[in-house]
Length: 510
Image (cartoon, rainbow, N blue to C red):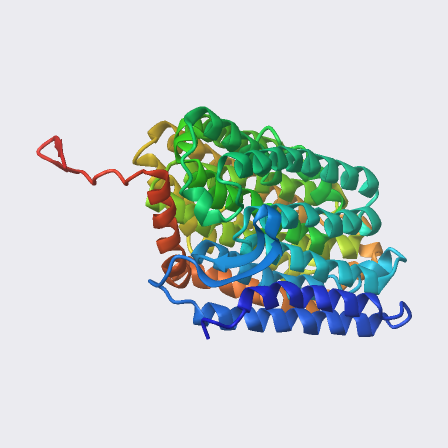
């Protein structure tokens, strides 16, 4: 089974599905939905088979495929997956069918083509899988840029009132970041032996100054994509304007390309530059945690609030990466997965509230739990998971990040913990103002607010709730997969974990 072309098929399958759905006549919208859902479930099944076939403790990169593309530039269609890429690929395959099911009526409300909307979701899945599966730097760059196109049209054509502004801002920010990466990719090809092969470039001998400039080009692109402070301003607009399902993919998966890119490309290819830039990256990450959390507290728009919480969460992922310890690195990758589950759930549930009320403003709710108690309970759980309550999956990853960072950077870890307190403030404020307290009389006049969670919506949220609880108590299935890849990345950087210390008789000893 190791010779089976998992990654190329996994990448192409959603693209074929997108073409099939796109050619379904608009009048057959129900058929388009069913076909899109069925196709996405086929991708999920294939990803599960690939997870089972992955050999823990085996080669660092598995399922490797390589096909000629542009021989004169030594560009190839090369795919490979380590543990970090594998968990992200399965996360994509899980979230897309849930998003399709959650978005069942979204396109119809915009009066635009239903088949086109679901075709764009499948096309987005293709590009997201491709960017995580690519093992050729040029191929990665191509998927990194093409990924913008379906999301741009989803936001611009099917989003909210400010959709055009948000779509253009999202596209321009990402395009500028892509230009920095393109310059770095070209420079890397020139000085790295005129090749785009990842393994060859990791072993290339670059002088210090060149490596630092190339690192900066990649880092800026990834910092914008993540986004890290101060490159974050596009996300609240895009997340606020996008349909809830698309926003779940935007924040739950697409933005992880930034943190994944740092782990896969910046750290192994430019180890000295990574260590040299680490203090700056850590400072930006910590500032982002506090700054975004403070802004989230003051938001009146539910989707913008969730977007700001994600910026704060990416700060935790950032400090986990640049702490350069195995614990923090494992916590960071685990955070990428758990954040996708928790924030994906939160965005989808917020979308259910918005669809009922016709508004995303917190002030337009109030006491909604009296009308939709089960849905309000799901929102409460999603909020608790987002703030990393013990017993939910994000707690494990946040704990690993903080404890792994504390061993080498105590100040950054202590300041970052303030973000946990602020997270409790903005999540509980959102839940209290939306579902608790005195019932807003206007809600009783909205027929949709009289309907609690439907069977379709239960099918959407149930898997995410189950996984958040499961991985909150038993994260071993994920950590076993990502640990070897994180350890190999730390070896590439040339860092080792600090020796454990013990305190005895008032003295600290190794």
